[in-house]
Image (cartoon, rainbow, N blue to C red; front, side, top):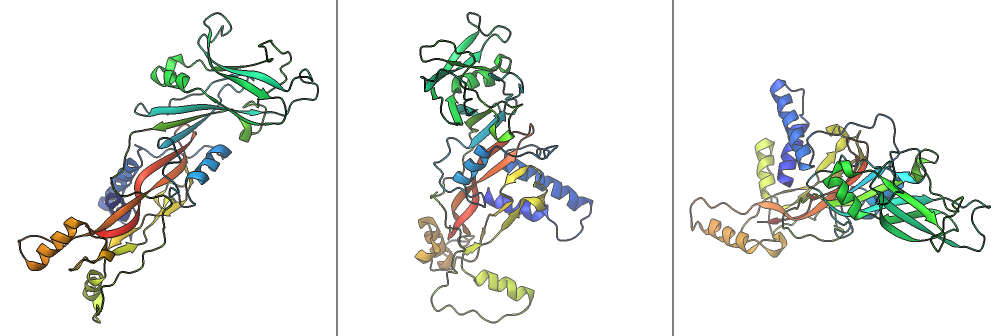
Length: 375
């Protein structure tokens, strides 16, 4: 996949003004690049400036470094995290999340309702109580949720009446129901009761609503999903060492002094297999409007020769070693020397706005060459 990306990027930014044929190739290259990122068309930038949910920004910074490269491949559950803001903008304890952007092939692993608990008013609630019971229901009958069979309990627990902050409730089964049958999504209902289940009026505990409070405190649904994409079976490590590899020179190798373009090409062939920088700038590609982080990343690429004999510093496979011997001894016609290719690949993460202006964190395998070897 990485080789395909390198070719597409080379086509995507021509060195000089191009005729219609080159423009067509550029458009096709960008289309193929979108396919690498699992999209048919680039999402349009938000109509107005939007601040991404702080939870999603913090999650990105936990999962990835500043260039988007994965710090630890085991942090995320699945490879996609989607966030949705409440669409009711009215009733304080009723919530509705539109999930039309969830792809049919995505497997829902975990779904969480995030509600911001407000500071209690001084007069709220009996002073002898320090906790109340918060229950989250899936609404089955939109017009009469309190009627028998009108709602289904999803989660319930005791919540402190002191302080403020985020409360998270697992509602995975309800979201799975909604993605299988979109018409079944009648929203959620949240109730606040006393320790024995008795009603409390007015409720001593309130959550921030989408209409009356700052965007950073809006009710939010977070989905952890997996779309089934998997990378190549190359070795994966934890946090990658992305410093350029030191040149690997065979012992006592002398480089002749050559001049001119042909000499440059010959010199390239004499250079041993190693990793070289390859910058991917999303602004140059035209994607900066919808990608939040990163602004670009270093994909790296592998270039150089794999001369006989292959030393351990060339990181050869057994197959490459045998191929090198066969090529050097001319034991079989048409056998080339081994190629310099990535032997370790890392994933990157994108934080972006989707078509519905929801914020998505998605992890893509095999996007950065971690090291190079002769294969």
